[in-house]
Image 1 (cartoon, rainbow, N blue to C red):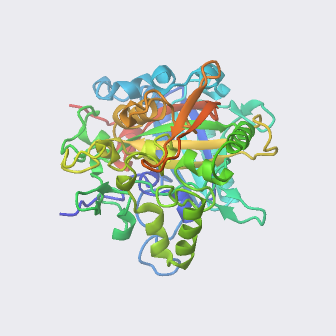
Image 2 (tube, one colour):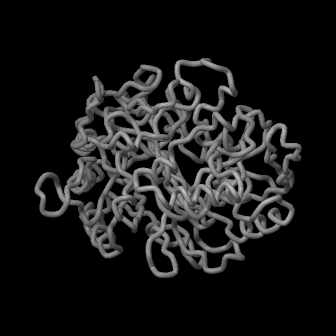
Length: 506
């Protein structure tokens, strides 16, 4: 039986990746609650503008609400829930990772060296209680909603404070918000890229109850024994629902209404060292048997121009053939080519390296390493580690030969269990590689590479080809953490309970 979700009760950013709906601009606000009663009244006002997950209709058809000019969503740190004075018994139900917060989990996440919390934007030295996001179809729509939120802050008479301290383009730590935006090409058209040049936002997980067509599940759900794909269990992403283990969350706040239809969000500001990346790619491509773009594809698991999966376009010749088929395909065929694949024919990692970003974050059943029928589904070890990705790039690269500046990705991961999902992937699959039989070789792009102990990865050769493997050595740190925390995204019902001060765990 198909899972039915109350989309009117779920915050919209959980179900929808707003960028796909032409919301090209975003602004993220972080606030502190200094007075519980005034803070709850403020949350009540904000809740009236919170965007739900209900589908939007086309203009004039009257079948569903029209797409808004701006969306608003809200979430809380554990300290924020305390400041809003939810009952102690409810507080005790939250998991330890969320209670501790991101900064105190730095050793698990590998946030060391330049990524250490001591080097984060100044706003993260403050006590962050509330996160509010604004996504808009234009910067004017974002500013209009921002001005309205400012009015609600002023109306709190000191009960709520908008925190400053976000890093700006000139290095100043004084901005009162974090802006983000899609990137644009030379003609001013939006492109699904990030600052290293990779096509991004392909293959986000699909779970039961989402409003999607069957074709969207291909490569995005869970892989079955017959090669088909099914949506993942709802409980992997929403509290109060059964997960892939056919269980409800072991740790969740009470009462049931506080947790139900909520989820946890990992917010990370990730600075991209564009100059270092470009130099490293140039240097390594000089000794690589293939083009520079082929090597860049091996780092990510996808080609930069159109996102072609390396497992189906493993070299320059294969990419040219893939491009010919892609150009001839219709829209449905193009989407299938981008997402519907596994690593079954590449169990040795000769096509898509084990170190590639795409393979590390979603091994697609390949962790069985050829052991037939080890589990009911080939992705049993993977299906419990999936995360919903949200966010946008931020800043502008003004000099591609330099690292300084303020540019990167606002990365947000949504999951029902931070430790089992996001933290596991970050610790065990990005910064460690034992599950991939690669020892402690880190993932190339996101790994916390140490300048004092340079890392390496091995690009395997096809068995029996007679070709040697290629060693990529002296990998620099390409991405640095500039801030973040763990947040709880309540349902709209739970928001109203919090705002009304009527959360009752008994």
